[in-house]
Image (cartoon, rainbow, N blue to C red; front, side):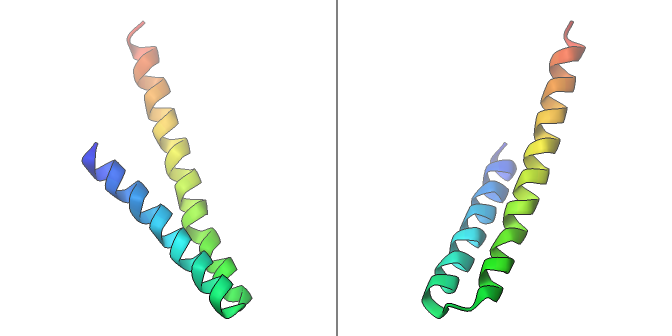
Length: 60
């Protein structure tokens, strides 16, 4: 669980750093780079939800 929280925190921090750099520089490449952690965060959440649902279904 600690590993998942650490990965989630790193994803959020990566997004925030890229968005701050986009606001400071005005360079649109930082906005594009900010979408990479968002994409992986969504993929991770979908995988986590799938495993959670499968574990709950196995109990019945």
